[in-house]
Length: 155
Image (cartoon, rainbow, N blue to C red; front, top):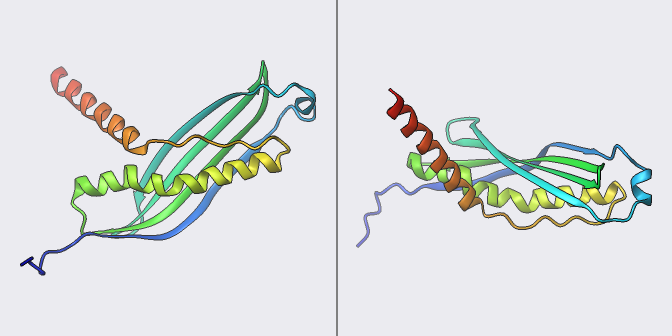
């Protein structure tokens, strides 16, 4: 028989929203007359902060820069955010949820926001590839551990 007095972690999505959105097409209308052979660069970053006791804001920043040769076609930057309740989580599990699970929840919304901005800018639809936030989180944690180890070794 399971112990019912054991506290279980609670995870809830409170709200998902666009915190910031920027679209620039500095070389239009010239860009529209060029053959469409884009060079696409995508940068993704996340950050989070506690808003209240168990409520955290997670912001997924997606920046897409598209060039045609030496000319910049467009740049779009979307900050897709969410408020999440994480109650009774151990610290390592909370960090994992904020660094991997929450960005995974936000990413489809960010993809739609970016795609919509690009289409409204008069450009062909842009579909962003899936992202493995678990791998990104583990990579970031590994880099943090390596930095701490290097600092300890330097003392």
